[in-house]
Image 1: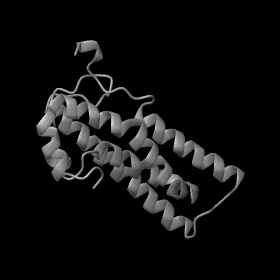
Image 2 (image 1 turned 180 degrees about the vertical axis):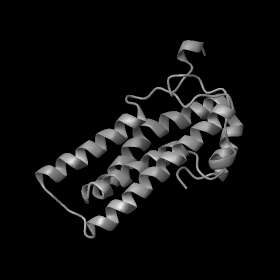
Image 3 (image 1 turned 60 degrees about the horizontal axis):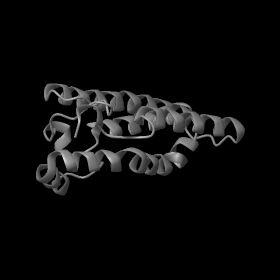
Image 4 (image 1 turned 90 degrees about the vertical axis):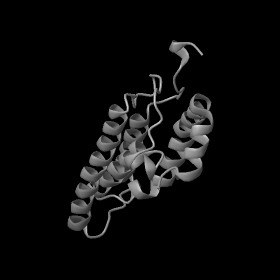
Length: 155
C-alpha cells in the first residue's frame, strides 16, 4: 500500500452530506411547510442539541489528535482510537454531526429534518462508514475486529 493511496475512499465528505440534507430539509419546508409544534421549546431544544453535537464532535476529534491521527479521511489513519467516546461509539464524530443536524432542524421549526434523518443515516452508512470500516479492517486487522465486536457503530 503506497502512502498516497493509504486512506479511505469516499465520494463526498461527511460534513457535506450532513449540510446537504439540512439544506434539503429547509428547502422542503419552504416548498411544503411541516412546522413543529411548540416552536419556542423546540427551538431551545434544537440549540441545546446543536451545541451538544458540536461538543461531542470536537471531543472526538481531540481524542484523535491526542492519538496522533487525523479525522481527515484523505489522510492515512495512523492509530486506532478506542478510548473515551470511542469506547461507546465507533463514530462519535458522525454522531455529533447528526445531533447538530437534528438541532438545526428543530431550531428551524421544521419536521422535515426528522423525517429525512433515516435517509441521512443510510446515506452516511453507505457512502462513508462502510468504506471507512473496510479500510480500518485492512489497516488494523484483528485489533479492529475485536473493537468492532465490542463497540456499536452509533451508540
